[in-house]
Amino acid sequence: MAVYAIGDVQGCYAELQLLLEKISYNNSEDILWFAGDLVNRGPGSLAVLRFVKSLGAGAVVVLGNHDLHLLAVAAGCAKNKPSDTLEEILSAPDREELLDWLRFQPLIYHDKLSGFTLVHAGLPPQWGLIEAQSCAQEVETILRSADYQEFFKHMYGNKPNLWSTDLTGWGRKRFIVNCFSRLRYCDASGKLSLNEKGQPGSQAKDCLPWFEVSNRLSKEMKIIFGHWSTLRSSAVSEPGIFPTDTGCVWGGELTALKLQGKQLQEKPEYINVPCEQIKSVD
Image (cartoon, rainbow, N blue to C red):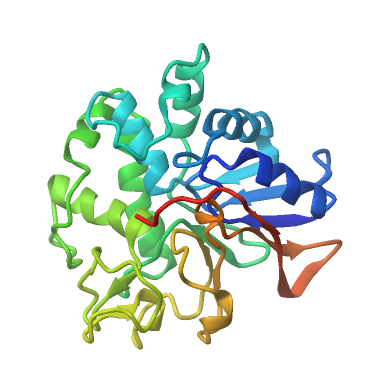
């Protein structure tokens, strides 16, 4: 059995199949972890959703911002953007089955055996593993309830931007989902800078990549994440930090991180395939 973590697919179904061919993927034995953003911008979002869902227990998926946006659009709480490629899913005969499956995916996954934790974007410095799991459960519970549409009415926005245990209501849930699905930069206090999107070095002077905050409570964790297409693993010196989004939908690469072969990898191995899809970064 092998375990691979795969970065943002974003509807690039053909490239996903090329990557699985390159790693000699065996669907009866191997496990695939997906770091969110299965859909949108690429041309094959429906095929990606159907394929990953068909893997059953052979796939682990955490929700990304594009997955949540699809659910919000389907719920009538957001509009399709000009750059969205979601219509094929929204008009599919198995639409409800696919959307219900996606809605029940988690925001965080922690594997006790290997010690790896999978999220889409990041964690604020005030959260360790237990806090992150507890916060994720707050949002997951409402996403899986009959009132999930109400959450999507309040999901969008950049405030509040600083964690406090005193946060309540929709603001608290918005902060939580923004960390898991949108975070790249924050300041030393953990105040989120959600409009900063470039590679490290391009940000405002008071901003840090979330994983470089010196006192973050997740320092002892091994965290795999996507979302940041301009961040390369070669630029990360912080131990236990494993970015996997290599910008497939922007004409970059689709990446798998091999975590386990017949035994746990001492050092995870990055495996890539080139991608032809080219879009403007947003």
